[in-house]
Amino acid sequence: MDLCRCCHAEGCFHSLTELINTITYEDMLKICFDIKICHSPDNTRQYAICNQCVMKLQDAYSFKKQVLENEQRFSEYKSVLDTFPEVKFEPPSDTVPIDFVTPDGPEEDSDDDIDLSTLKKLKSKSDKRIKKEKHTEITDSEKSDYRTADIRNIVKIIVMYSTSTPFRWSYSKYMCFFCDKVFIKISDLKQHNYEHFETKLDDALKCINTETKVKLEITDLACKACPKDMLTLDDFLDHVTITHKQNFNNGVRCSIFAFRITDSEAPCPECDQNFTFFGNLLSHVYKNHLTSGPLLCDSCGKGFLTKFMLKKHIKLTHSNTEYSCQKCNQTFKTHGAYSYHRLSHKGEFPCPQCSEKFPSWYLRKRHIAFVHDKSLQISCELCSKKFVKYNSLKWHLMSVHHNDKPFSCEMCDFKCINKTYLKRHMVSHLDTRPFQCHICVKSFQRKEHLETHVRIHTNDKRFVCRECGKGFVQVTGLKVHVRAHHSKSDT
Image 1 (cartoon, helix red, strand yellow):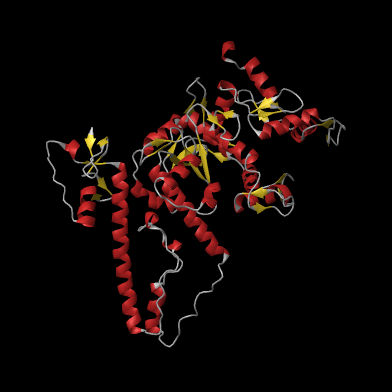
Image 2 (tube, rainbow, N blue to C red):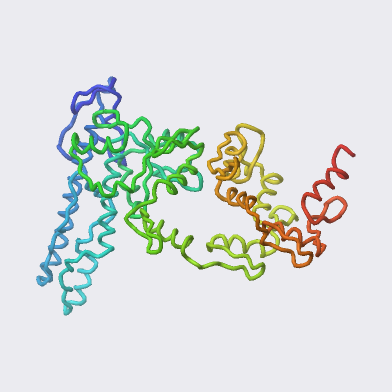
């Protein structure tokens, strides 16, 4: 057991000689209070500091650093004011509580600070007067800055005082909140999170704005300062407000989402539904539990939490804008889908290591992974199947091994892994066949079935056997031909 030399508490603590961003705790004590704690080299367990004293010491060090920096800034102001007495110095009117001072934080939160670069311009343009005092009305950008500061404050309290794990979600992987390193398993992320200390929090907070939805993993949630176990994030926020006198704007609480997830399951915090992958849980929460918010759609009245979600809703639901392909007349709702489709008309994709050519970028990547560079393959841990994209592995695990099919048909027992498959299935319940062949008047429920059928009339045998050169209209015909005439069992 370690002994905290500042409060004499016993436990597993940090060494006073631990290096935190080029400075140790014993250096902080020396700088802030001119205190030198005696150290016995033969007993390092008695030269430690507990987590609660660390937070107090960091606050004191940050406050002293803040005072010294502002005093230096005031000296620079004063030298300019002595040269130009008509310039009136106005200190910031809105101050941040001492507990939340971020000496190395972004300067954009201090909108009322005098800009030194503007004052320096006065030296060469002394005949120009300073602009009038700032308007008393708060603009939308200023409100956004205040809300951003409030979100950063509440996140800082949660990270410093709780055992929760903040994270980001990017391309179906967990991303570290502090260093952007990605992980497939949440357990690996939580283990990695122990490597980071609160001093890196200020840099991470700079990425937060009003559109940010901060995600937390709160399994085994507890207060670091007490310690005391908590059931929910709301319980922790009430506790840290009453017990530790930490203040924050509760109006930004809606920007923080708390989950209890493991490597094998991701239960919804609002209902009883459970998921195997966090990405499916996140889609479920956004669709079913975030149906109201302060930003309302003018067309349907539906509420949204952020401007980004409102714009996306308007574009996909109420906008008539469509991107049409001039070569095949296909239409797309988003420019991203249209851009991806255009690649299919740009010709073949050659392999950089051999003479093979492929009709799509994905097929070329698959060829490279399975022929030239096997390190690009992603293996399933439960079977021998291999993939090129992580999303393909995810769908494989959901449909084959976990049977995780959250989307179900209301008219039959059909279940699938995503909304696209469900939408394609719903066509089978319709009696209409809107796609009709202009040659034989045969009709189809799906457009792609009509396109495949038309190739029969045009004799478009695009699937060619590599062994004998025989062509086929459909890929199934080619597969049957290869198995019948060119399989290894016949040789």
